Figure 1 (cartoon, each protein chain N blue to C red):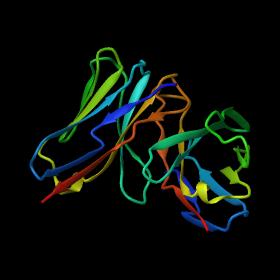
Figure 2 (cartoon, rainbow over the protein chains, first blue to last red):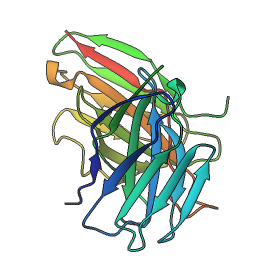
Figure 3 (tube, rainbow over the protein chains, first blue to last red):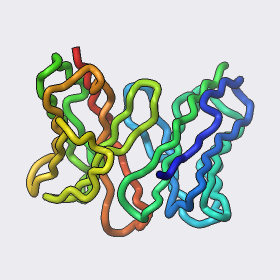
Figure 4 (tube, rainbow over the protein chains, first blue to last red):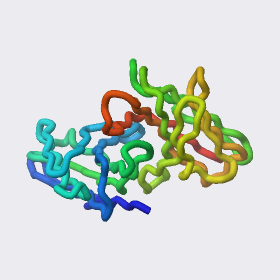
Length: 111
Length: 116
């Protein structure tokens, strides 16, 4: 059974601070996706990483895929109150089919 | 709006009734996935379907739950004789089999099922 450990589970920071969320597994991913979910809504896809060592940037968000494709991180620079939400990583182990989700990181950015 | 559509957004059922949840995938997508999100828990895979075929139902409870994706029309997740433990948010996602090989899945807004 593949498991995806996401940490931290909760994060409360002040506006302007930086933060990093981690996603780790003992298994190799075919690809890994990061989502953001607002209360009462479905997850919205932020990025997909596929290649080991890959780094992708989306404005103030930087996504990194580990060289061995077993781990990933999301770094937010100068967080804003609008970044508040639930961040989810999801791994694809079989090149298609179901995604295995991490437990999520509930981020709260205070003004 | 070419996104994944789900209806109803909210569904209230009494114990023992049936719940039917509908999902229309994004235009051009022929792969549909259902996930369940229980309070204080993450998203859990239930079933993966292609048109007229169930590909993987390893996450589906063995009893009372069924899913279909007919040739025409939306995918349906059906829960018979609902119990309070079925109360959750149910999300549908879709992906395209062609183009990207990354299994990018796009989610609908979800159906929030409450069992009284």
